[in-house]
Length: 360
Ligand SMILES: [Zn+2]
Image (cartoon, rainbow, N blue to C red; front, side):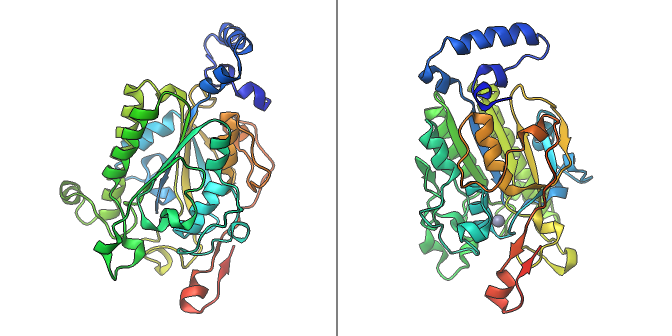
């Protein structure tokens, strides 16, 4: 389907039970509308990154001890990608790749604490340049605006009180998920009237854990699972807010992660040092209202950098030439693309321990 056709009710709200009638009706609506009306009809895009989420810890990806009912339900309404790999299992470089659709060697951010160059086009800029409101809600100082990812966002929420963390690892400076979700809800309440692109970052699965006491007691000895259950509940809260606002069926929801967590596999407790699947494979769930193959699975290898061009194609926004990924919307609709390999790297062992960097 050409991009122009996606930029309309014709694609997003296709009624499969009464397809012909709906297509004719929506095509007439689309043909009679002006540019501003077409923009108003564009879908909202919400991209959620659950920092440090392993692929294999969701009920919908086979985890038998899961407590992720909201994400599991979302997967039933969406398409789940089973083989998504991050280009780098480190928070800032991976998010730079996610939000610029480029590899670390291109965008230049190889480790936390570096800054994205102002010359690298971002997904947020592309949405803003094409009429979208843009806002981000950040759960970790690692993604603070000083590191360059705020470019293109009208609002970049996340103030980190560094004075309270004097001497601490900057990676520990975070905002708990309930505050992040509440800020996103407030923004939606004020700005939900015209198309928006939201980026929401939950850091709760990344240590140190700030799980509320009631959740901690429920998941005694299983803190990682408890943090995930907690974030899952926040995503359920956000979905409810979108429903109550009448926005749910006009909103594309994409949930993924920047990297996984070792949890002891291969002797790695956290992430960043090795390139095993525990830390490179992440979930990806994309729900398109009225989209094809609800509950479907994509088994092809999908680099994380493919997410941004997929979202621009779904939104009917041109994909920047600088994006190195490709849209996988065809895969979501059951049409296989040519196979690709996923590249991953980590310079962390070299930069911090003077051992060899790893490339895969
Ligand atoms: Zn991370």
